[in-house]
Amino acid sequence: MSLRLVYFKECPTAPKIVEMLRAIGKDFERIDQGNLPLGDPYREYGSPTLLWNDRIVFGAEISGAGACTLNLPALKKLEEILNSMSRSASKVEFFDYYERRLQNIKALQILTSDSPISHEEVSLRALSIKIERKVPDHSLGSLFPRTSFDPEASVLVGAYLDSLAKYWAQTKNERYKKRQRNRLGDFLATHGDREIWTKVNPAHLLLRARDSGSKIDPALMKGLELVYPQSIHLPRTLKDIPKRNLTKWSGDPSLSDIFHQLEPYGWSEHRLVLSRYGEILYDLFRNSWVHGLDAGSQLEQTWFYRGDPEYEYFRGELKFLIPLAFLVETFEQALNLFENEVPEDYRFLLD
Image (cartoon, rainbow, N blue to C red; front, side, top):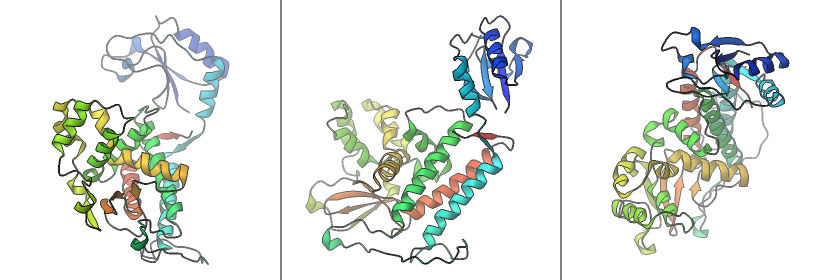
């Protein structure tokens, strides 16, 4: 563990944290800001700030003149934090672990009848598993074709992507706290297919705005309906919708485009981003599968569908289709891009 204590001598709380670290028995490096040249990045922390591999344990980054950190953790709390940080993984260990997860999820694809992955790509031991495949029976109103492993794959892919986003935020020292949906959205927008994952679903946005509990100002609602009167993916009447009507993701605006169009009407980016594809994936896919073991009512995904995300009307109801194969491809791409940007000596804090 690499602990660094950043401080300046005139700070009255600095000696207190030194005593606490000695009492706990942790080795640490002292960085006296008074000895640092102008422009040194360690001058941009309050005093004292404790860093673990340059990740803030307590304290804060600042701009301008130095300031004292007055609220120190209790001795027992600090010891608990530092002990938990002993669970860490090297870059090689971390990405090897996720590579094995990727191979396992590809193995589930192989167990379906029309998998796009060759059997030679993933080696499997002899398995005796009956593959149950359901073709959608639209005469009964079903839009939920399932293979035997769709629920398992959905839970796993949702958990994999969300956990990668968490560790990505750790490397950036970003604290999303209660904004996990934005954490996943930001991660996918930068590490998945950028053209797709930066898109906003206007139908989702309009449904949120129309929700009686949304507390969206009527003026914002009016602006949204003015900008997207026809192109939005919502039915007007059942007669306007053919029985099978597919619409591709490419017709959706990017977050920057829709913000540019709606900002004059009073919309803020933090409201719009909640309908970005990654945020929708967290709310309607990850949460539905992990907590309910079901796709929910607005999303649909299965090995049965191939290609990129698309919309489908069926019996007057809109579905946003996110094929599982596409999510596996996204996971693989995000994993590779993330690995390339992590320094070789970085250690992941496992929590």
